[in-house]
Amino acid sequence: MQKKNKNSKTYKHILITALASLIALSAAAASVMTGCGENDDENQTGTSIVQGTSVVTKIVEVTDSSDDSDNGDDSGSSADGSNSSGSGSDNDSSDSSNGGSGSGSDSSGSNSGSGSASSSGSSSSSSKSGSTSSSDDDTESALTSSEIKENNSNNSNKGNESKVCTVGGKKYYVGDYVVCTYTLKSPEVLINYQGYVTYDSDYLKIDSVVFSETAKVGSMRNTKNTGKIKFLGSNISEGYDYTSGGTFFTVTYQVLKSGSSTPTFNWEVAQGFTSGKDYVTNGKASSGLTISATYS
Image (cartoon, rainbow, N blue to C red):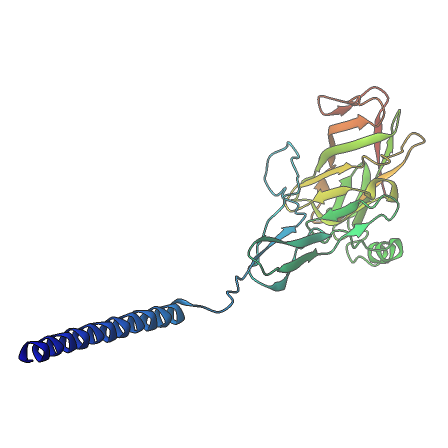
C-alpha cells in the first residue's frame, strides 16, 4: 500500500513538473512573440515621400565684344541655372539681349517639380524672320534730323574759323553733329557681315549707331571701345538683300575740337547667301561688293 502511494506521489510530482515546464515554455513563447511585435512596430514607418529635384535651364543671349582686338569676335553665350525642389521661377535681365527662356524637368524622386526663367533687355526685333537685333549700349536712340539741324544752326561756334573741324571733306564747327550714312551694294544677297569703323575720339564722340531695316535682323553692334564701332549680322533665313543698293547703317558723331578727322570703314566678313562666297579681301570689299560713306 505504501508502495502504491509512493508511486502515486511520484506520478503527481512528474505531472506538476511537466505542467510547470509547459507553462514556462508558453510564457517564454508569448514573450518572444510580444517582443517581435514591438520590434515590428518600432521599425515600421509610414508612407515615405521623396522630394524630387527640378532642374531649370536658362538661356540668355549675351553680347561680349568689349575687348580691344580687331577680329570682331562678338558672340552670344548661354548660361545655365538650376532650381531645386517643387516649382519656382527665376527672372534675369540683360542690357543687351532679348528672349531668354527656360524649362523645368524632373531628374529624380516621386514628386515632380517645374521652373521657368526669362530674360529681357533693350533690343529690337524683326517679326519677318523672328531674329533679334541687339546691342550692348544705348546708341539706338538717335537725334532726329530736325534736332540736328537746329543744334548746328544755333551753335555758338558757328562762323568761328578757329573752331572748324573737317570731317569726310566737309566743314563742321565744334559742337556740331555729323551724320555719316553708309550705303551698301552687293552682287548677291548676303548671309552675314562683320566689320568695324575706327574714328579719332579726340575729335569725334559717338552719339548713335542705327542699322537700317534691311540690316537690322540678327545684327549686333558695340561702341564700348573708344575709337571703334564693331558690328556684325547673320540672317540664315532670308539674308540681307542689297543687290539694288541701300542704306546699311548710320553713325552720328559730335565734333569735340577743331582740326581734321575722317572715320575709316573696315570689312572682316561678307558672304553670299547662295554661293557662300566671301566678298572681302584683306579687309576691303571685293568682287562687286561696294560700301560708300556720305556725310551731312
